[in-house]
Amino acid sequence: MKKESLNSVEASCECIEKVLGKSQAFRKVDDCLYVVRQGSSYVMVSVVPTGPKSKHSDRSVIRVVSQVVAGVQPEASLFRQLLILNGQLRFGAFAYVPEGNLIMFGQSLLGGRDMQEKELIAAVNDVALIADEYDDRIVARYGGSRMQDVLEEKAMAKLFGENDNLVLLEDE
Image (tube, rainbow, N blue to C red):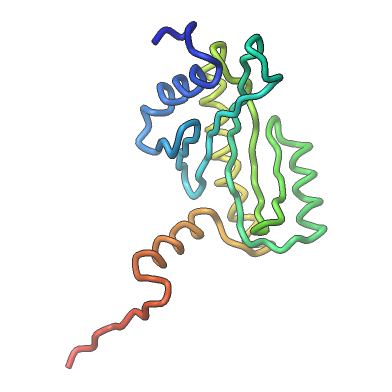
């Protein structure tokens, strides 16, 4: 399909799949939702329609977000450090989500037919690098778990069953 005939969301998804789909770390999760793994971080890339709901307004936003730490205790010193970092970083911002005591890092870009491939790649790389760098620092100082640890724990629980006991056989 020609890029000019696609709406903003479709053009954004096509660009994401074309540019990021070359990587083995890339997965399409659902329509308009993708994930890229880098180091101990997972970057979620989602396409969100935005703007007034009219046929003359065809806009979308690309949200590039990584869960940095889960289960961290909310402390004033943590929030202060995150705000200081937000002022120092060249783009993006840390956020706190009370449900799950999550620290997130993300940024948004304009989607659509004019979306720049280099900007998309830079945003995904930078979000992944920042999440991968700061997850260990935050866990070491404030507790919680890195996204990779949370996923591995869930995978093991699913593999062995949450209520099953692992029995080790001894040599007789």
